[in-house]
Length: 166
Image 1 (tube, rainbow, N blue to C red):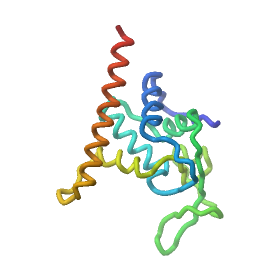
Image 2: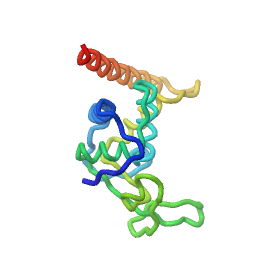
Image 3: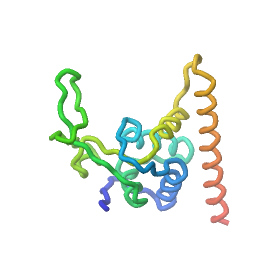
């Protein structure tokens, strides 16, 4: 297990909230699927938005990677290759490029995937942004249901924190 150094440390209760959030909303999937919604950048920005909105603290990519490591979630790495047609880096087993920004450099990867259900991350992302007016009813219901689950999680955590302070 590798623990990434972070410029800012989470308080113990914040680290606990992050881990409980992961265990509650992002169960391990059990396969090695790699896609946009289970790549660490997408996951960390989604979770950061939710935790900031509901608990008033930010997390970094390193915080989330450390939490997944401590919870023993499988993490899959890919290097990349430059696609001259698309003008972007694409994940490739034989790739040679790695990203140098936080988290990626420590893993020597261009893409870091976590074994979680990507559709749940997509639903979580929906609650941090609005839906277009013409969105179908099923999608609106998914967003409403996930919003309720997140509010219930927030209430449960805050009730526990209040109970432990008394």
